[in-house]
Amino acid sequence: MRRGGAARVLGGSIAVLLLSTACGGFTQPGPAQAGPPLSAANAPAANAPGPNAPGPNAPAPGPDQAPAVAGAGLLADSVSSALPVQARDVRLVRVGAADLALQFAFFNGTTDGFAPADLGLDPRTHVIATLVDAPRGTGYAPTHWGDGPPRIDGAMADHARTSTSSVQEIPAGGAATVTVMFDAPPQETTSMLVLVDGFLPVEASVQPVGSPALKDDPVLHGASGVDPISPTVEPVICRSGSEPGQPTTGTPTRLRLPSDVLFAFGSAALTPVAGSAIDSLSKQVTATSGTVVIDGHTDAIGDDASNQRLSEQRAASVRDALAAKLGAGFTFRTAGYGETRPVAPNTRPDGSDNPDGRAQNRRVELTVESSATATQAAPAPARDPANTTLTGSGLVPQVRSVTVRAGFALVQVSIRNAGDQERPLGYLNDGGRIGVRADYGGELSLADGTGARYSPCVFSPAWWDLVATGSPSFVRFGSDKVPPGAIVVMWSLFAAPPADRASVAVGVGGFAATLPAPVTAR
View (cartoon, helix red, strand yellow):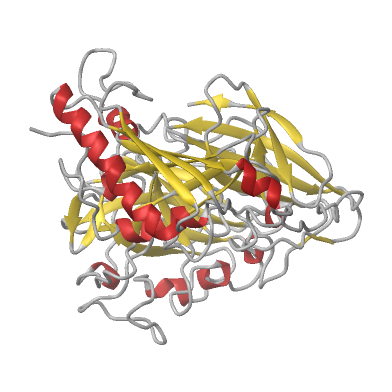
């Protein structure tokens, strides 16, 4: 009998259950066009124009445009209106039992040659691409090269398994199919959030083995390499708490871990990948002493007594692992609640099973309350001055959307250059700065009105954090200057605010004021 949660081992890596309905995922507005945001429900066909299509004077698509198939047609625009490139017909297709291929047509709307590697898709260094299973709080990084498929010149065994087209120049107005390989999720998976550097997020359906949507590519043949020390599937860790450098007694730090990655089916023993996840989680605890409360929860599959016992045992397992990371300054309390505190329905309205909801209910929640005496005795850490360098610069920020689903908030903010000269943003996508600097590294943050501030989620196997502020995302070749009249769209993933919050305040690094924004639930 199934109890609490399950994880499945594929080729030595952990693949977790994923289910997102195509119409219920995050939507993806284009950077400058009007009209409704794209979703799987209203996206244009792969070869049809839509609200995000290039203007009438743009070069025509190249012959490598992928054919239209059922469920295809999702587009991902560049995050900068100054960079006319698109990821067209984004699709995820299973390749055998162990692999999943991300494919899209990289359209070059510029006036000269352009390689996908110029935009963060270079397998000789880093392929900046991540898949996120929102209901299960899990991220997937590209797999590494294994035996069999031909490698790109200069790519090593620990580099991402990516098609040679990623390093080949695409002529102006042309398109080329780019393929990036990932570990395959279980058969229950129907869609995933696709995050690729330089493009806006889009949720794509997962198509079965043999789908005509998959274009043949040498990278599809062979097997991915397995690196047990550096897993490619791990939890996405999101933190909310007090402002960095401020006493945390008033606003505890809160974190959530999905059970499917931490534990095998019906077990309270931590999986091999759990060690890396616990390490990532411990780095989000900024207090040096205090109390850590760890609560275990399960879904409704199985009998009450078994789920109660399993939730208690799993909380204790996380406690033991986290205590070894945080040291002697903390005390720990654990509790198990079995299936009694669901955060999502275990069944659909018609009474059928809801794997998506059950996955959200299988979780371990942590609350960190710093020691009041320690906070009072020690001076507050020094804080960098608030970043107001962009105030009055002619750059105008505006919140495009705050969309909440399955425990996450996807935030998109446009920054328009209203002046007549190009303006630098000066941002860095550096996880070492997020949560340390008062301005959260010059990137995005959220406040929910309770005193808590949310920092961007972290996915440790990725070379980047889940926030689109890497400088290649804006304009070509490492410049982060915004041309006059251009719009840059920043996005990031956060933990979802409480369900009773109809609005949040979005902080944008460089600007003195935060921006109020309504919350849209999906």
